[in-house]
Image (cartoon, rainbow, N blue to C red; front, side, top):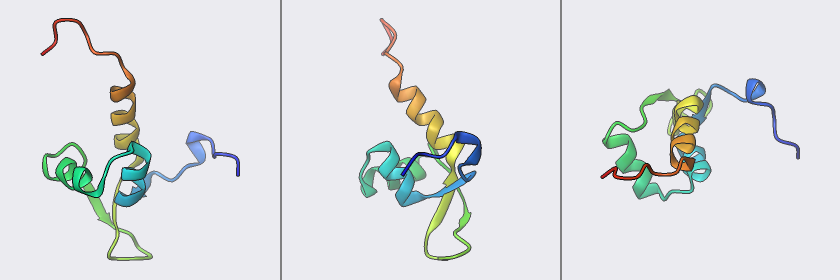
Length: 74
């Protein structure tokens, strides 16, 4: 199935989908939420057990992870 253009993708995504996109475990995602790296914006209107985060925040983490580390940065 072809991937949707960025403008066609929903603004919010489930935490589990964000973890898959970032390639991290549930435990790591929980830590990221606890540490404030990502913020839960509300429950999924279809499944209230699932929590939602902003897709733009997840994509920002992906872009940051893709950048090479600067020399001398500790």
